[in-house]
Image (cartoon, rainbow, N blue to C red; front, side):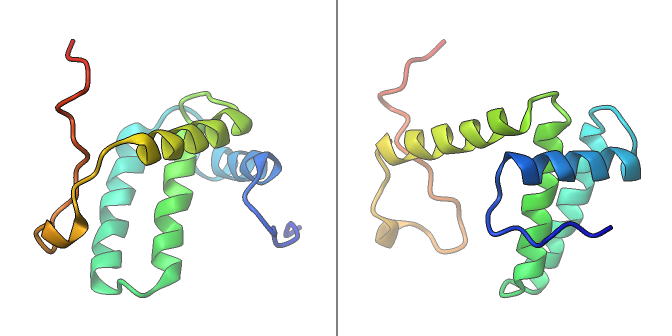
Length: 114
């Protein structure tokens, strides 16, 4: 049975995705397999950058990889929210000075070094 279309990505949605993924792709971390698939999907995004379905594939694979760490769905959502909050607190260079086609990295000069 097809689940109802979600109105948001929440813990219940991720739990459903986990059940489907484990039944379809098997148990275990499958880190190399997930990363291999992400690499292929990145190439598809490069070929069709306006195709939302290709971006969705990346999101789905990232959630699958995160769930395969053993984290529960709510912990994954909490980690995403915490990472976004951290990124918003960081210092970023002016995007207008960044090289086109290159990653814009945050300022690491004030971060503690191990």
